[in-house]
Image 1 (cartoon, one colour):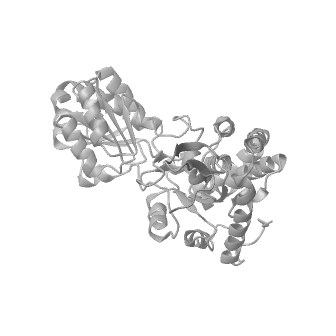
Image 2: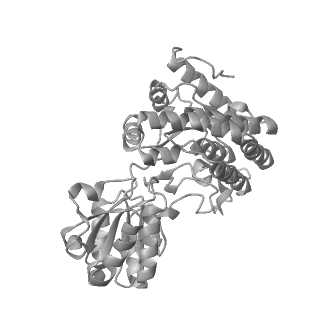
Image 3: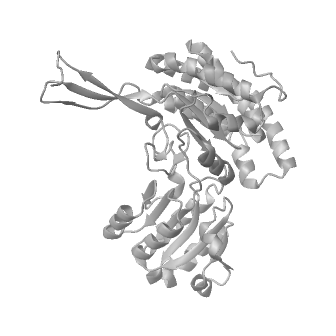
Length: 428
């Protein structure tokens, strides 16, 4: 087994190749592990997290101090910070994953052919998954648990800013694997912070890596999408919109707009742009913007918006394509649902977009014409989360159109194979 006490001076390529080989070896028994085995491991992991809370918090204090000294933005520090409540939530998330239906072996479809062949399509693990992430120590637990439930081995490469926290959490995951008698190499944490380790993962670790999932800022995701030689599940940015239609209830629009922007500003599902139907701008705009402002949000508005709400800062072209990850929102007026759709099509990252409306025709058109991974009606964009979807947790949000889209949970971490049953048929 790979020893994690190697120094940064060691050959990173050799370290990463070793990780890949160990992951591939672990993936074989994982693919046939029983649901009971996997759930026992997950339960033991959750227990270990709670039991080792003090050690995890101490490790996180080191990361937080280093992050503050390095001048990390408030949104990054928020992602990095662990508290007893957040550790308890991470453990509960793992228990939720254990409670999910095991997707491996699930019959997706079956049918009979006229020649008597019976064909079945069943779910299978993807194999070995690489997860590259920044400032989110909880991803260590979420990704490890989700991959295990789906029968996959995983190699985790956390950012240097969360190295101590991730290592403490990873130790708990290994405890769970040991307790259930599963391969300890099923969940491996890259033991070096050298950026060259990412490059080795993007090359595929000699054919031992099947999928890469990046969780981080634009520069990381762009690099992964540009350089990866294996498939990637990812989203580049979360430029999310809330559209308030003329048929919306004002009280609901205010509540949703404030929550979508301000509940947690540093997550990818936070709203970055507010669109208001021009038909109700005179009555709806100011109450919504005053509520946002009172919550501590900076308003950047178009000329029309500033004419009605002079306190807004002038918005420029860059604001419509900016993922602030901060208490800032850009605001403009649109001509009904059609105008909202046009704006979203032009500027959205196709991550998550919401409509607040009582007119079912407007909702139906929004749902039909907006091509984003997640669409919401009368609900906050902050629900763009695998846990909120009942998936237990997520390994990330994918905005591509192939295989996985939206929250990537246990089902999305599987592929499928065909089983064909015959009775002696030969092809003429």
